[in-house]
Image (cartoon, rainbow, N blue to C red):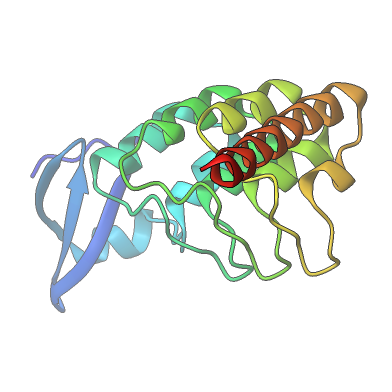
Length: 180
């Protein structure tokens, strides 16, 4: 496999002491282990790092190389959580298109991506998450909803609107059941 030093490669297995199995731009092959040791930087959660940094091309490279979209870091955070925490709308947009994305994953503190976006005040991202069906009823370990963590009026308004819409639908169902 030809490797250009500026490319991002994911090394998954050391097939023997002399070779690593690597994937670059969807191509898989073997790379000499001495080259990897000299040139590579070890990153435990590359998708998380790409999301934290708002690096869309790196994120896409990770997804093209089948890095799991729902992987958790040591704190139990997903890449979506980090993208929301950093306000990286373009990264959030790409992650929200991924099949089987765990939209409501809670980290070790009980926070979700929605909690992070509300806390950091990113109303545009809160809106994106709500449109995809993010739950507003999940409480973190401090018993706080995303609404409780909202740091600006725009986020709070979006979350209140979603919660009241959910309550209205629930009341409608109860009335419908009582009438029958």
